[in-house]
Image 1 (cartoon, rainbow, N blue to C red):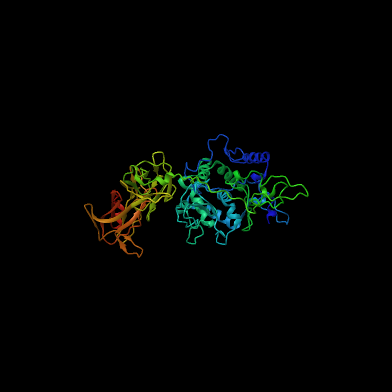
Image 2: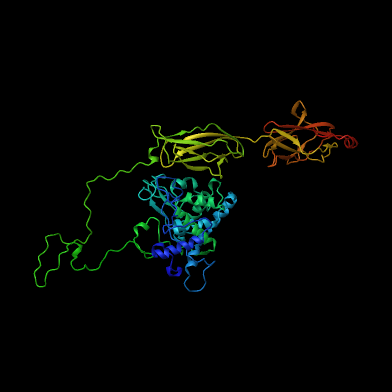
Length: 589
């Protein structure tokens, strides 16, 4: 089967000259401004090199290892040949397993609806999926999109990776000591806890399900209001997934490759990458595709190398040999004697030193529905001695049944504390549901009491309401008013959209009691009603009332319209016989 996919470009399987030429050619195919430097993929300037694991937010993956294989130099064909000949390299690499490809496209469609300003291309999810897991190990998934076996990365114990102690009690990664990246998009459990989504509508959010993982990755890349059609935002989003310049360049290479053409292949037949970012330094020379660790050398020992121990020359022929005084050669490798030096102690991370969270000056938060809160939530991480702790991840979560959310529509945001130990949450935007909202701050990877902030969402209001025309409002007894009442609500001179209003036919200007005679509205059962509640202006601040009818009572009547915020308008209605109504119409106030 592997022969059908041709020979892959492997960074460890080429000479320096060939690898340099390959990278140079790929660099020419990148989007403007995307620089690929030496063989390790870093830029030569050194200004954007991969950060140390302890210096920043580990992103979606905890900066876990990833596949470094680059796409072929030749542009892919839209689809492989249907003949029985071996598939060329470009067509094989461009193929994406059917279920995996479907998950990427469904995630793009979902984000196009929920976050149209993000402009997420499914090819970006495909590029990340290729780099993170080789498209779910070549599409080894069941019909529902769940991998046939869990995909779990190395434990993040600080030994060459980020140091992230267990945050899920082993629920996702089976490790109760440290976290591991999980699934085809390689989410760490602490990130999946808020980014996880149910992409296949089975009621679960499973990081090992490609539909769930692809949708979660889409939401992760679209947070903070990023527009992925903008090159700067695209780079920020990818680096937030795994903070490495080489990772960025590798993902961008596959993104451009998939944009030039791809096609569907059967599940389980995808090509598997062969080079990983955490194994290159331990591979001194070219590797052979598909091989693992070297097998023991079973060749007979050379003369003078008995068992790899003695270097004495062989005895002369015919001379009895005397057994050496040393121990006979062992068939097992020698073991290293136990060291008398105590093992090094693990240096505590900044997160380990956090004792509690403090409010960093955030006051009472209040905003009108649909508007942004002017103040942002700030939390400070401190030791038990009250010393600020930098480089700690603080998770802010909007609790309860509310549509208030952070910028980008997310209910959860994770922010790294700065040098003063303070993490500032993204701007909070009020939803349409009014009332109190709670936002909780917690330390990621550390069990300390959370800190809660109260925010209040108040209803939209208007300070003025006026009629949009001056048409006469007159009717004959038992008839129907020809003109409908339309008003415009404003606030500070601007249209007040989505403002609640009521319309009531009142007894008199100084008596707001409901009139029991005269003009009326009709309900769904054609019964007379003289009070309408639950009205709301449109986005432009306009409100058009239902049609009015008259009973047999003649005279001048009053209709009062009141908006949230206290703005009122009283309109006169005239019911008179035909000749009177036509000669002496009464206009609204």
